[in-house]
Length: 538
Image: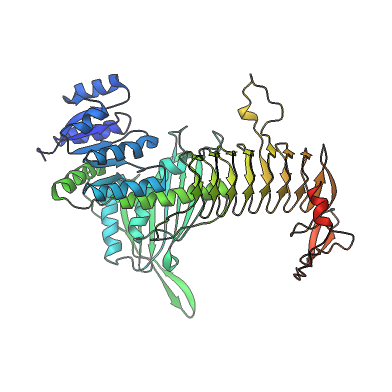
């Protein structure tokens, strides 16, 4: 390995560990950091040089090791690959799935190693565990769960899911050998608004294999445990124990006796492991892959798969629903955006959605499938827009707004996010949420005051000012908006018969004063002559 030379980009908390190990292996030549003083002190300690990223990429090192902040990973990886360098980047490979896919393609195009730092895949206990699974010692896999819990270290730039879960997701995908078909994530943000401290992510794979990942930095004690359950045995990787007890094999089985399942318990076996630090193994693996031109255990494709699961988990966390993944299918032409539209990194835009002239989609926005975003709109940050929504021109959806599926926002309608704004006073901590439920129509120039909910299939007349919650199927108009009638699922005003003239659905008012459907649609296909005109003029 003496002939190989690498540079480490980033001299922070984790970068220092990488610098130490590559220096011990005799291959470290340069270090680089955004703070030149820190880079100088590290370089002096290890008797190497400090250089800028530009100079490193123009220089003679064959490999670049990236431990910069996650938001810079994609850009530095791309520059390094274009400079014909082999790359080892800490997790995540990128914050954007499409960018990660481009990086994998670029590495392949330039015949360069692209390796992602999923450290626990190099842990002796995990390597032994994977060997057991691959050899069928546990039988058919049924269930895997991981706990990664601690008190701190709290982050302000990323939530617990992105900070703790990548390693566990990486191990689970490796053991099962595929990506999940669907993902559901739940969590809570206690310390900082919109930065989750606790998440639970549930993964469903083919053949009904299940897995979940529980991560938290608000936990009374440290726990790092991976449990694998198979038909013929179970294994526990507990990284909090001594080397002699880190990996235990439980040859428990469940047998059917007289038509009922009964556990067949057995004594556990503590497996013998080599007590070697996984980071050293990981660094050696990168150098070995360069020398022998072989595929890394955690290559770019593996990093991309982990990122897809993280991305799906984050979307599920925001929307509160199940996210389905398309395994082994490239997502080409997922959505359309006009060349003048601007979409920040860290957004998700669903398939079939169109974003037109001069619209700006800010960081953290989720937009579902088959939406139409008109001209000169601003959405975000962290706004959720469901499937099949239509947002006409000149609409701004601010932080705190959530649109469910099938919402129509008329031209120049207005959402607020604070009750008493002042230009000279910061009221970001006073933002209120506005929830627009499924099928709602909001007329042109209407104003929706924050903190209110618009019930499913309600109709807000043009120019109305909504100052309180609106009931489902209610029609409101005026300033302040008052209810003036009821409207059907199909958008038809209801008369005293409470039957939709278009679909034939029958409704009634319940004891609480809400409109309820009591008879399913008959599809009458009768177009009323005057009632549509009345709605348009509200």
